[in-house]
Image (cartoon, rainbow, N blue to C red; front, side):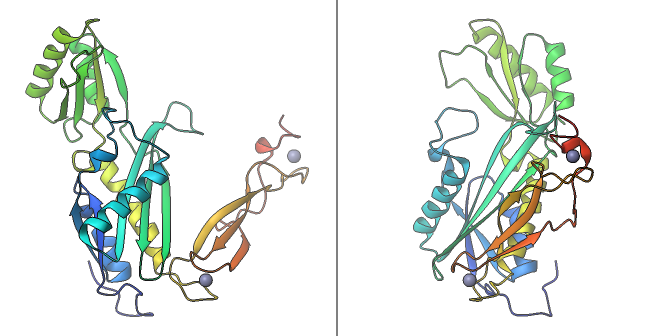
Length: 290
Ligand SMILES: [Zn+2]
Ligand SMILES: [Zn+2]
């Protein structure tokens, strides 16, 4: 990827930014930071499993945002770094599209030099996330196909498990999948097997792509200065609902204004939606379409 050769200098030119990770996410994040900020993202190998894992062996305390911040701080301490990054993903049913799964990703950035913290998030339906409790090899093969296996890995464990060490992760071949499944069938107290998509970034290309998209979003934000104090990281920090119905002009639940803010000073700006939408369709109106 080419470096930006025009425009203002990046506030992070030639800076090393430490990414706290265990799952090779640097591959997805590095290009965006190189291109937009001329900054180098380097990995800090920190066992992020200490802060909780996807498969639930360790409970993750707090929200995903808190977890991302903690991870970032931990890695920066370990590496003695001034600039740090950490990412955190959550998966589940899509909040607005029925029967769709979603990947909610957060990317957290800390600049100790300027004393700022900036984060961006993305809610994407580009995910293979799914879980199921299965009893036959036929069901397993169907699950695998829907999960984009074997380019995307699976996790298999007994459905009712006394011995929590029995868990097969990162499965990417048919043989291993069938072997793990029959083992778990035998070991599960109810004769059923829990199968889920492995959401760790290095074995889930869909997730890697979403993280890459998010890295671009955060990179652009860090390349944007506050109009007042010139600190990097200016961007949308909150939304105001109340977009007016196209028919009756009463406010709806849709976003009407975007509030941009600075991570350092109090300056903020309130603007109409960046997608230019000025009114809401009648179907979102509680009066026209109760
Ligand atoms: Zn209306
Ligand atoms: Zn400012």
